[in-house]
Image (cartoon, rainbow, N blue to C red; front, side):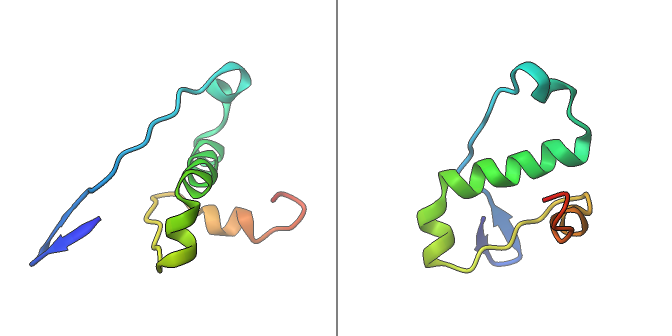
Amino acid sequence: MQEQGQAKWPIYFVSKVLQGPQVRYQAIKKEALAVVFVARRFRHYFLSFTVIVMIDLPIHKVLQKLDVA
């Protein structure tokens, strides 16, 4: 997102069509899949800049468990 004063505007969109068993994933797994997809797609940005991922599910709790991650 790009900040202009108090407003934040998206500057890039990506999309992915869920196929096969991905359609039946729980919401938290779909969000984790989205974060992984975007991280791979925008790897060059993630390596060059500080990136804050804003989500509405507690994925960080899932990703901190080594057996689940």
